[in-house]
Length: 510
Image (cartoon, rainbow, N blue to C red; front, side, top):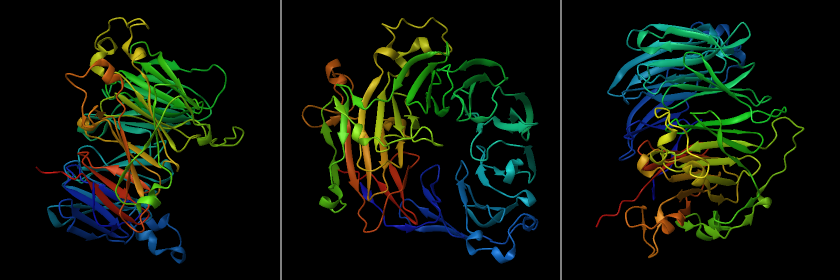
């Protein structure tokens, strides 16, 4: 792995373009575009820091204005990499630029309602602006120059989604103290198609299935209830695993095929529901006792000091069964926001692996293995045949805790590779001078590596262990606090508080 030089950034505003050819960076009130080939600057704009004409109505008095109020707070690429925007939430303005025309510029004034967040719509020609106090979402079209207003979103940072084809925009709203859902047609200037009430009393969030057929809606943290609805507003089922009062749901993740949905709450349990019966097919529960057959990787002690933060070092392999009690942190359930439950739950691109992090063991990554979607024909909603019996159900017989990754420091972020061909690759960071890599790549008996394929026996496939490595960042002062994959999965973006660098694979030529 080869690392680039270290560059300046502010507020962690760094993003690859969708085609991975450029990197967009914000440094205070300046927007910078670099080429990923040479990392030379190809475009730069100094963002106009003057506030919206009507913004002073809600802005702080001039005597309290700080220079940082003019700094960029949000950036983004359009889907075709033709446009970029820079938003300054405290000034209530969004500036849009065209990559191929440095002189072209568009400016959006949020007005008296203020600005909390800006984001591109999937068409790459509409900018969504969320106002303060949950007043409305405004869709600004760069094509027509007009705006469409949608009132009373419940949340500015969640509770909205676009269907995978971008045709419909779904927004959780609150009207007359009741949770509702609005469905809008993006091809007809966000015209309202359907508006229906939700069964929730205090909506936490919702998640749209990958195929766009179902909505999973769940209550706030005080009630463990999940509702499955269609886009027409029909309630299909209500899932409540425990009839007694308990803390609510923390994470929900649809399987990439849309055939299953994983639900994790404060109770350290993960329920997997299928979309045929909407009932649990398997339930995992956190345990400090790791059974036999689980591959356990342990970060070597003080390896950064020994290697001076340079090069690669493999994790240490620990035999199971094993106890990880000493990795747990104490949690007081009588206090608000107890440190327990599922804080991250992500499927890889192919749906064969599920990454789970529990808050009471912040330095541990659990990886569960699942059968491929091709081996589950009866679980497809398009095939309504009866599910197999528990003894022959491949989802039950092949699903297990496969790998445990133990780190010495709490994990800040862990992310799957977005490339489907490398779906089994994982990267994590802990705020140290290192990144941590794991891959389910099969290691052959002769020491070589390769994918499991033709000629691989069932016993060898079951003994698939993967690879885990610690990679030091070759810099004197750089702590990796956040990390992102490039869209093609061949590079990494490493972020410190005010700096960033990139890491790319080294391709050997023979």
